[in-house]
Length: 335
Ligand code: KG4
Ligand code: ZN
Image 1 (cartoon, rainbow, N blue to C red):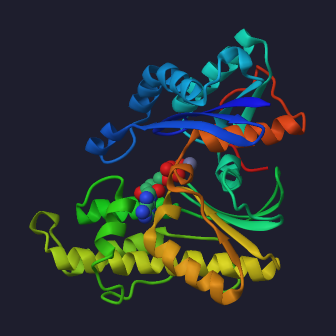
Image 2 (spheres, rainbow, N blue to C red):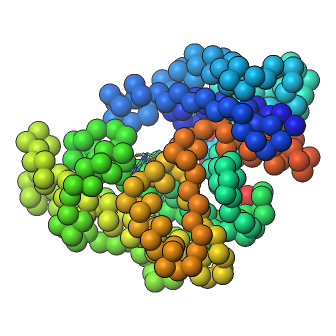
């Protein structure tokens, strides 16, 4: 079964080809021009997807050595995300499936992030706990079987990646902030400022990062921080201290969930899974707790077509195709 997967829910235009669960190609273009605005501009994202979708799909097919006529199904994200951005990939995917007279499969973007753990070997065994940490979401999910999930906790306000991006903006180090904070923190002292660890109540699997962001803001006001007169060591120490707080909370809740649900395998997906401190400390902790840790390769952590093709493949196997009347759902929940 050969599937084309399409992802256009935010600022990455991506397409991938998967055959019988094996990835043949994954082509992604990140719309870097948003950085000059300090965040993703939805209208510009849609227009860029419109320009990029045909060449990206053609490149994915070419790299896979697959002709359109060999496709058995087309999968595309229908939510959650930016409505105008989703509509480009969704409409293109539906039209292509219609033209080729093959099934169309609508995919939930958050479900696809979870299934990015199944793209490469070794793969986690079911049931496992997955933590998806991206610019728009922070979700802790019990994955019972492919396509069978139980939501254990979500963020009540900012997503983890959003907190990285907002703190980076306050420090004047650019957008997207996560990779910059990660890089600068490597040279800083994580104990420089003891920022709060937002655990909420002791047993809660929910997250909240907006208070931490406000603590950073108050601290910067207190020390009269001026991004224009950046002191390199100070910024490195602030990045390390902020990052330590986020990483402490993410690890604490993921391990707590693994113990509560007695699973052996844990996984992390989404852009923040690229964070080097999170990876290093989580690996150490998982070893200590006797858990197996899975984190996809970077290109499958950030938004990508491969995870959409994987979700589409698993849905096809179960005969769960979609109606061509399926519309974009910007606030789609994980079912
Ligand atoms: O999954 P993703 O590509 O897009 C969304 O669906 O949101 O995640 C992007 C997020 C951004 O907030 C970015 O700052 C963050 O992932 N990110 C990181 C790192 N690399 C990307 N955060 C912390 N450390 C990193 N190395
Ligand atoms: Zn995403």
